[in-house]
Each structure stands twice: as structure tokens, then as C-alpha cells.
Image (tube, rainbow, N blue to C red):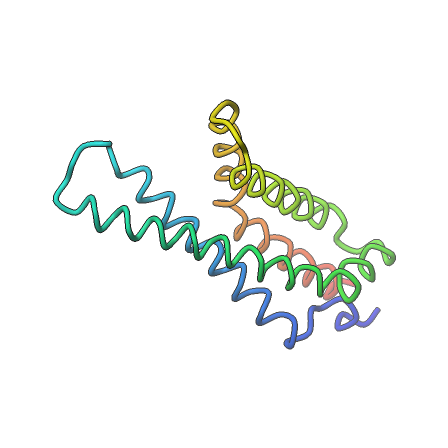
Length: 149
């Protein structure tokens, strides 16, 4: 089977990788600042707070762009590969992780109370931080499956 049938073509691949990369980077920077802030007044606390605020805003904007990029690959990559039975396991893991990231991101933005927020934050971080490795494993496995026939 022709491997290019399932490969995400460059007009879609670049926006997808850029938006997911920026989404990951802004989330990781926000998370790193949140971990490093101990609640004490520090000389750079104002700068850290301002950077964290802009990372969160950029993360939200990146999420909107990522939703568009992900939606664009549904018919050209996901549906075709699913029908052909190719790389379903890791594809399901990615789809589930992305679905949970979307749901927890929505919940973190619109959640009206503090109750349950900690678990939602933990789930969002636990899924988001390793996502690039999961995506790389999916790509590697897909290329191997196509090469080996």
C-alpha cells in the first residue's frame, strides 16, 4: 500500500506541527513558572507573573489554532488510516489524549469553582507534557508499518 496515502501532506503538516509545538512550549513554560513560584515575594515575581500570564494567553490562542489544524487532518489522515486498519493503537492513544486535553482545557477555562480544579490541572499536565513523545512514537510506528508492508 502506498505510504503517502496516510502521510499528512506538508500543507497540513507544518501548521499542525507548529501549532502543537507552540501549544506544548507555552504550556511547559507556564507549568515551569508555576512550579518554581513558591508563593513568596521574589525580586522577579512580577516578571514571572507577567510571563506566565502571556504564556496562558498564548496557550489558549494556540489551542484554537490546534483545533483547526487537527480538524483539517481528520478526513485526510485519521479516517483513511482507520479504514485501512493502520496504526490504530497509537492513533487511539493520541485521539484519547487530545480529547482529554481539549476537555480539561475547556474545564480549566470555564470551571466555575475551585473544587475539582486540582485534578483537572493534574490530568491536563500529565497528558500534555508527554504528548510530543507519544506523537513521535506514532509517527515512527506508522513509518515502520509502511516500510515493512
